[in-house]
Image 1 (cartoon, rainbow, N blue to C red):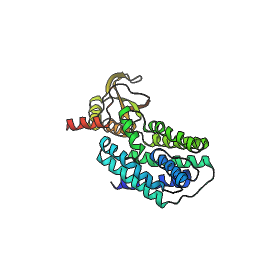
Image 2: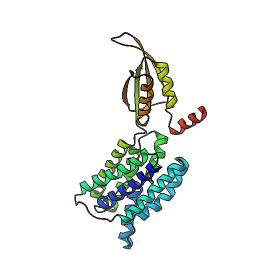
Image 3: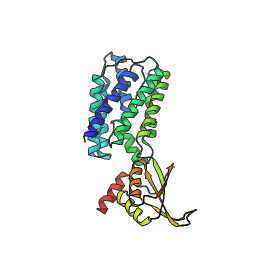
Image 4: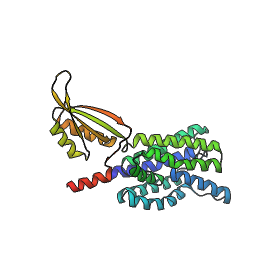
Length: 287
């Protein structure tokens, strides 16, 4: 809990720094609700000459999306996400809007990377920065696609709006910022990136039981023969997420310290691959 609280406070300041020091001064827009809040704040100021802090709009727009998160992602995840939204809103009010550099490309990259770091860190610890992150997580669970790719698709609308309401140059820099954000998110948040492990072992029964104790994943057992030793071996093939890879390695080497593991990136999985909710149901049934 303490680690999550530190992460959500840190995420709030990183996103707000990205907004107020890089994106807002350069008229470049962030991802999701943060970007929509920037657009609304700019449009309201243009029409009424009334300045509304971006942090206030971020909080108001996140309320209905939090209801979706409560239903689809669970109570704990949503509470931490809401606390992160509060952290972002307060930090956006506290941190002054000031120009660090007048180079729009540097502003786009720096703002995008800071936003991506904050978003990826929160997702790694089981919650989010709210807004479209929640929508992306829900869609990711449903479709199996990476969070970063879904965020990029959703945020194309922000790019189009930035082009029509302001300039297409601003829209292009917004695209660069969003691309940086989504790449950083997918680098940190790897729970939906899958790998195939080929485990060569002389202790298949012990290794299989050890893996099944720690992971709710299916395996395929293949016969093998050592090319030099000519000893009979067993090859276990299993597909896991990158989050599960460390657990898999520990489960194997506890039982067979001489096992050989080959990790192969997996592009697509077709058929039954249990998501977190299905795994939880299976664990509950087993218990």
